[in-house]
Image 1 (cartoon, rainbow, N blue to C red):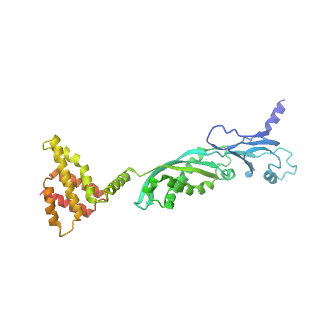
Image 2: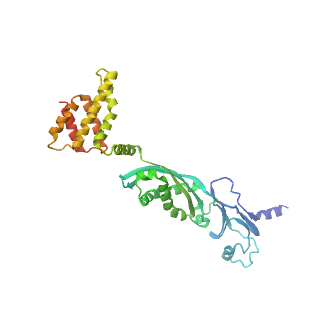
Length: 348
């Protein structure tokens, strides 16, 4: 009885994979010390494929179905073995099962901002993230290129390599789309299609098929987003620098009012508001005139009434605001120096 039990353990009648749990891409049927019985049954379920490997060489690939293992069902393996007994004896091969189900909701993202060329900004650094789905489409290629002889190969084993492929192709996909950043952010579906097209060949080279790719967010680093907000603000006033300066001055009004000191409370707020509006008008008039030579006298005469009520602390606060605009590239050094001289004369 013990001898019969031993013999039964040596020959395999049914080869199948129940695929318990998620995330397994490849699984090797345990063959140690055992051989496949002639006429045995191979069961390949839907969303699976099986690969027979003999002495390191892929012999046959089976799709979903039930197969009797004979010379008719294993023609390539029979040819490789050159059996002269017409497959009458048991044989030993490694059998690998592959899951061909979609592996969905795989995450990707840029751990650090990446620099890309842009039609509007010249170059920008952006962050992006989303998800994708794929499946094993060519188990023979996947076996030879990726999973190899491992007993089990899982989704997490491949995750790092696939993320690397995504990041490697982001810049190429954006360049191929020819779409500026502002339009990409508004048309994430278009960017996702460009990314999918760029990634398909890379996935196919390792036996995978990219089934879906989504872009959930495109954004700039915080410091660049502030510059973009400034540009959007200028666009909202039609690119009119005078109006933009009035807007910037209005943002500083609360600071003016905090240190009013004269009268305090409502009176101090009113004085700060009046000074801010008056100063905004002065700056707008100066910028619109372009500081052209020969017109300085007339401009100064026109501005004198408006500047009469400007206090020293208001002038210093405005200089600080102008310095911020210069550092952001909104004002040139020449414009800043001219306005600085103009404002300092108000203190005399």
